[in-house]
Length: 218
Image (cartoon, rainbow, N blue to C red):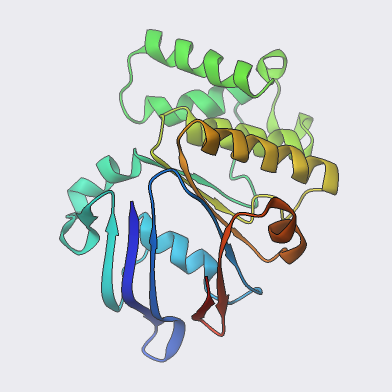
């Protein structure tokens, strides 16, 4: 599903973000990327959905060698990959339902299908009663669930979560983890970056540990 083979990423000629990283993630796995701030976790995720390009090495996602994915093909690749961020990245001037619908509108989904899929995902995440609320009217945990809804509404094969619990209290964090675990149980491959080692130990899933920009354990 996802493979890195001797991947190195260098910024501005001398800042090494990742060095000689190799691993393979099977379809349907739930995998943590653990390491301190600045270890290269976010860079690793960005390489998977081609926001960044590797300096060296080979990355394959869903059997595609990303080196040969042309710029015009990137949107098609990203439709199969959902991404969740620590800071939610919601549109502040749009309601909850408008935020989720936007993810489908940009892919030219028919309006009838947008409405159906949007209500399905909001019901699944128990947010349908707040569909007319704006982000500032929601708690941090609810905003993260909206971000998850937006990522899931396109039925991605892979879900990338970059520190999704980093700004949340322990109760909200557990709710988000429970949602991600259920999503994974339904078949979606989940790759979650986190610096929270206690969370990793509690959930007991496979862990890739990055230290000093190298993969030190898996």
